Image 1: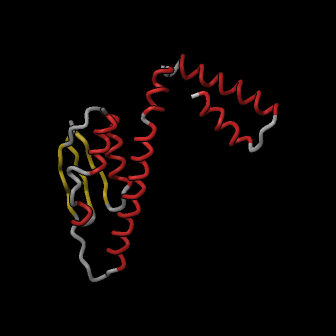
Image 2: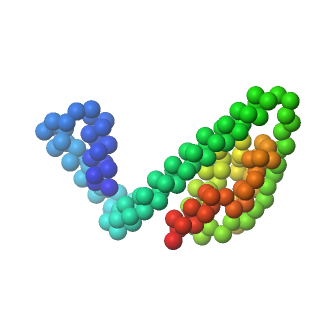
Image 3: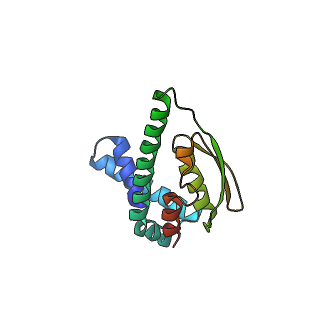
Length: 152
């Protein structure tokens, strides 16, 4: 965490000098100490985050790919004026173990164009899609599969 704070400090300063480096080390140290004492962070949590950083980056890259794909589908719907949309309301159950993973799944679904997570109750998701093509495979999407792998 200290290194992340220091990197953000250097980026925000825009240049590196002895003065900014010393100030950055002090501010980063104080922020890290604050996070450990007040927010409950620990070195083991930092190590856990760094160990799983690859999975999280792959998930983010996949999310961006799906956002672009959904945007292209929506563009096709818009530009083919003769095509009628078929909105759907889909209910499905997901077996994600943590509330954080469920929240990430709901936000990932909502970030993709044409889909909105309407509600989550006890693992039961309700998702509205603008078109039938956007609803295909949403029950057991790659988002959920990747999140299950990240929970392990």
